[in-house]
Image (cartoon, rainbow, N blue to C red):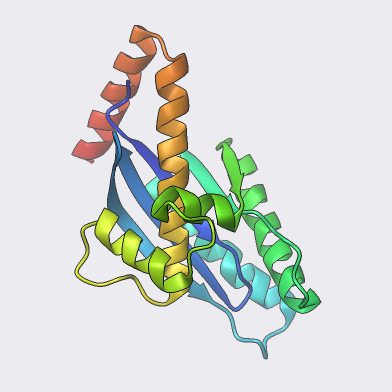
Length: 185
């Protein structure tokens, strides 16, 4: 079994896009990176998309995740908000495909259930559990940062569980060597 899996989680948004990277070893996540990419509502849409795309791509290239986890677009009453989330989701999917990285789409309820045990947890509860799981002094702010980390943690746990079920001893040894090499960088 690999020593750890690195997941980049994205809480997509056009004004604020949370990006969080965690390493998950067994059930223990460790913070690698977190940021909130921002674009100004007064900018032209193509410039906003470019700004967020460059930020997402920079995070992927800098942290070299094993997988990307993205919050699944869900129906909302606010069409403008849904469009922004969908556009950013497309940018993330393209960046992952270009780098041949697997992508997991998780619903907000799946993420909340994974990190808090309750699929209808509120933002404060998610932030507090992310703080506890990552052993931080304070919950990441704004909520987009905590949400991105929660998405990464949830997928890290799922990925490790799948790998444990389907890997051979040779695959586990190879993955452990890759993880050790990454740790030395």
